[in-house]
Length: 170
Image (cartoon, rainbow, N blue to C red; front, side, top):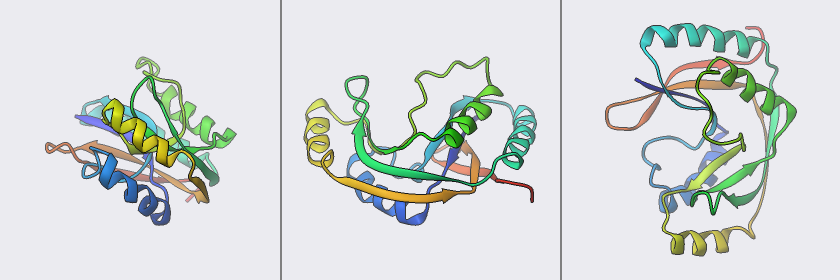
């Protein structure tokens, strides 16, 4: 079974991301706008129970923190993904490292670049046009993050929450 760990931003930021995603993101219907902490991984239900216990401990030792999105950016030429850039903070980077430390045998494909995808699987021409028109947009959004989520993938390819982990001692 496939799993992942993400942060879902506020409804306000999700609505803004979705205003672009419905046109430019082929995964629009499969998952809500999110910031990935742990990329997709395969695990058994037993392994995931153990992983969820570790995530619970990590969340208990993490205090709520602020994220700030500042602009539209792209991973081009590596791939044609357009995203809202989330400024890397010490808290976010540490949380990402802590979550991924539990899966040290799985090497991440890319370095951690905090972002919320708004366009993907675009042709080179589409990417160039869309990114050209969006990159001048100023995105100035700040919010407090107080939880993250363990997701699993359904048979139809969509993702759903398995468990939510709130920061701090409950």
